[in-house]
Image (cartoon, rainbow, N blue to C red; front, side, top):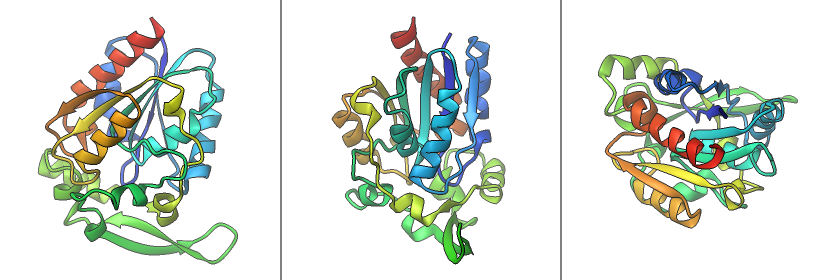
Amino acid sequence: MPTIVLVHGAFAGSSSWNGVIANLKRRGYPVIAVANPLRGVQKDAAYVRALLDSLPGPVVMAAHSYGGLVMTEAADGASNVKALVYVASVSPDVGESVIGLLSKYSGSALASSIKMVPVPADGGGMTMDQYILQDKFPEVFAADVDRGTAEIMAATQRPASAGAQEEAATKAAWKTIPTWTLITTQDKGIPPDLQRFLAQRAGSTTVEIAASHAVAVSQPGPVADLIDTAARATTS
């Protein structure tokens, strides 16, 4: 069976896939939820690509949110990657960034919910990390997750470098690898209409679900179902 490689996005961590992982493992899949560094597209993609290159058999990748950009970059030219699954995600073309795509569609509440924190940059100087304000996190990121869990997610969120959201893709793996997309119709992070546009452009097989941006936490079953569908279609 193919190895399922899961790539989380900004403001989340590998544990956001826990429900999906448990479901996939019950079906017999080996699973790796990579720890996306969230430092920048090229750095993050190189990190993920190194993992992909270490895996001997076929791979099906799934990514959430900004992780879709990283997956799009990392999987390009990887002969073992058989399918890409975008989960409440972005699938940029060359030259496109998360910020640039979000600016084209209304409906995202992220811009008004971000706290910028100065942190030391590699090589000296300072850069900025982005957090979602904890009091806004449940509504913006995880509206269909129970409040207690959403508050824990807010407290443990992984910040993304501001540059990661601004850096553009240089590759587009979806042009050569079959894709599936899970569109979240109640999403306040990545607007549903943006998700639909990107899926249509990529020629993706799509499923829509009434869920928040945190669909992997709130509804892991349908996420695992779509990954399983992609795996069966491309590796059986």
